[in-house]
Image (cartoon, rainbow, N blue to C red):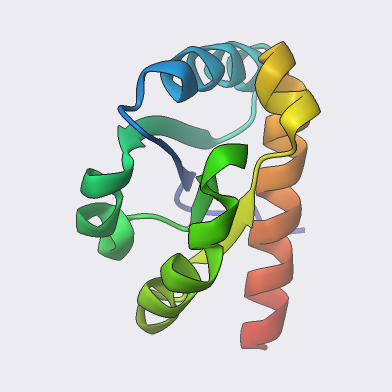
Length: 114
């Protein structure tokens, strides 16, 4: 299997980017420990749209689930996968489960391109 030449770019989105920032930090530690080529950042909901051309996966905080359709539509031209972080993952700051979700969404999105 050929190694992906660029890291998977993941953006977490919440109100101010603070709580998702803690989750992103934990996920970065897990990715580094596992040797995964994934870049994870957290931004506020208002900033997220600006990053769509640069990311592969957008993960919304559970309290932004109502915005999923809006972000999915905005992300479509950039081929960005959009998902909602499960409350259990978000609340426990489970970086490992967050990475699993991001990779699953990314792989599903890239398979749809074939």
